[in-house]
Amino acid sequence: NSKIFYFSSMWVLFEFLRSILFTGLPWNLVGYSWSWSLVYSQSVSFLGIYGLGLLTVFSSICIFSYIDNRKNKSYLFIGFLILILLFLFGFFRINNNQLFYSENEIRIVHTYFDQKDKWTNRSIEETASVGSSELITVFPETSFGFNSKVPKNWVVGYLRKNENNYFNSINYMGYTYDKKILVPFGEYFPFSNLYSDLFPENSFVNNNLTKGSKFQKFPDNITPLICYEVIFPSFVRKSLSNNTDLLINISNDAWFGNFSGPKQHFVQARFRSIELGLPLVRSSNKGISGIVSPIGNVINVIESDKTTYLDVKIPKKIKKTMYREYGDLLTYFLIVLFFIIGYAIRLKQNS
Image 1 (cartoon, helix red, strand yellow):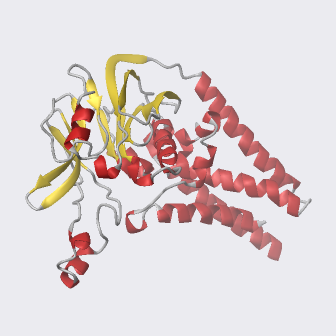
Image 2: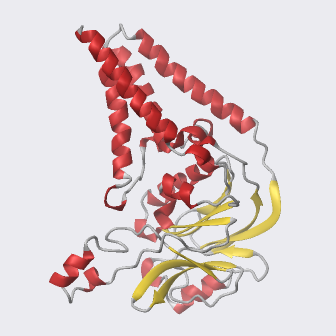
Image 3: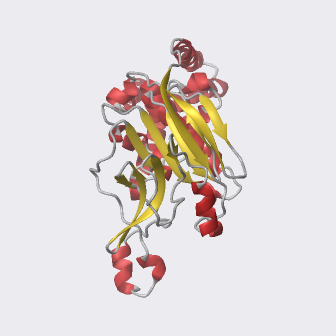
């Protein structure tokens, strides 16, 4: 029975590791398996996605350990008790959080261009044609190519050149945000400095994007997130300011083709709203665009095969969540506690 505690902790430790190693890829963590239930998903507001994953694995093992050994009735009870408590927490959180809207309205642009057509003059002109002269307008990732000469109230994704460096960037109100977490092999080649010396003529190795600097100035009521930056819970949390009212995620999901990637990307972005109690605006090319409430409810969404837009009011944020205040501290505590309990059970069995 000690293995029930060891295995649960080790599962989540490896999820932490794959979120860090080689820039990390915390894609489809086990906690996202609750995305079908808005009630259970509320647990990430205090546990975070890793903590929810830990209790998911632990509860599952507890319940199924009873099938293997009928003496494990207490574990069966514990597994169901955790699931019941998580359900009750989510149920009361949803019912006690009334949605209020600010007076601010925003336009979300959704495009549907293949990679080969994305930066043609015709595509860029079609994208710009749906921008608003009055509303803040959010456009997808790199949708304007190298062009950043647009109205100040537009949140524009583009490629920025600075001397010999190229950045995946957002421009808004004269401020620039450069993407900080680049996709390995997609936006940069790992250990490219080494390979460029060995293969100086290889354009694949040498055409890297440059990572944005750690400290960048941007309007502090908005936290910008480019593409898969939104799937890194700790990164998003640390990117917030005290005045952050809105998460904006722009993405180009055309890379996924017609598979499930765009849906998975949207689901994972949605969990950041629940964790942090902040509304999320998402603009995507060939993905899912829309607006998510601070408790993760999808208010409005676009899954169109053409260029279109939504004009929406922005929900007000929830003042605080436990995850926003303390991050993954509770999960770390549970991991240590599980190891201690597992060790104590092992000692008792061997005595």
